[in-house]
Length: 298
Image (cartoon, rainbow, N blue to C red; front, top):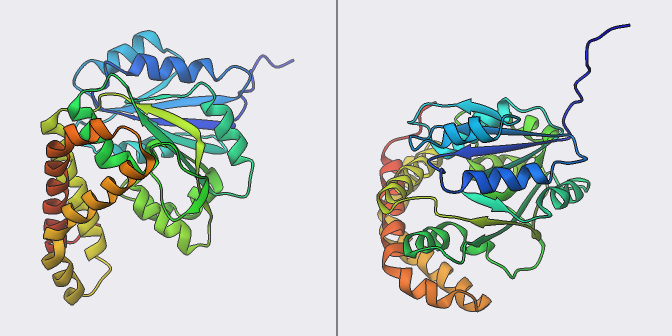
């Protein structure tokens, strides 16, 4: 009789990008591990931190698959590495700066057992967050602030998302430079795949960036977005988008303001963090403008 133990293929892979999350990683992974009981779940963390996060993971979470990446990688690139090294039938994506709600995995599995190829969820902010964290939150996640109704969508944040593995494999060509969700979702929609945004799957954002770190990240993510967009449009349209780039901060600010006041939550935090938020939006606009000048690398 063979002594070889058969390792069950995971039903769900939780892929976490990790950048300097020493203060939140233990709460994040601890909550996910608590929810893995009774389910075949693998946890893959791709980390390029310089603050000791890797040591915390290695010491306290030996069951986690820890992949070490070079420090020049962006979060979408870390996600891409993790997705390629995971094996579950479904893939959930987030970062170690988020702490999932207590029913996070159960709700993901419930929603994945439907016709949807990808499912995005709500993102709330830590009540104890400072102004920089609130500015980051409004800049990136105001669209996903509760309350909102469940609906079919064209896009959602990969910071709280899950997908069928087969669906991702079908658009694998869109992930050659990492898991940039806007690009991946565009390809999924071209393939007539369906995306759902639901308030039932919730994560809580904890301090994720310094002011300097996030303003730099906004510039480079904006540049990636602009250069990817520029690679598939005529030169005349690139020039027009470049000329319109100064309007980007004001357009985004209008959308964020409308959401916050419509949902009637966190208005005081929004007003206090507004100057920082505007600087983050300007940084994105500068990056997007520069992206129209240089096409994305292949």
